[in-house]
Image (cartoon, rainbow, N blue to C red):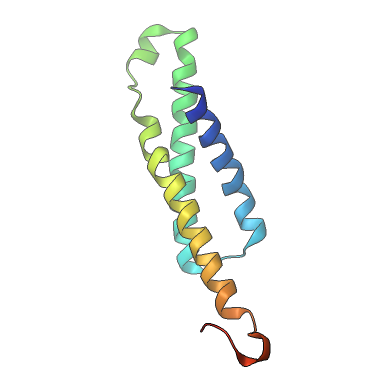
Length: 103
């Protein structure tokens, strides 16, 4: 895995961890957060199993490198959907100055 991909994924994880503190969620967003969190947990389990390569090559060889595929899709998707929902929510809740503005 290229270092810039690792950096991008790490920054997305950090932003994903900050989102619940920025924006409390409703039931729909809670399901999205659970899905993304599940994919991140599966990826972290994959990291631990892949780290076993240094301890036991036969055990690590039984686990292919597909652990990260769900996180590669789910994490950017979750961040994009949640940021989009946050923008829409703040846009609809913000009062319009002087009664003129987009609705």
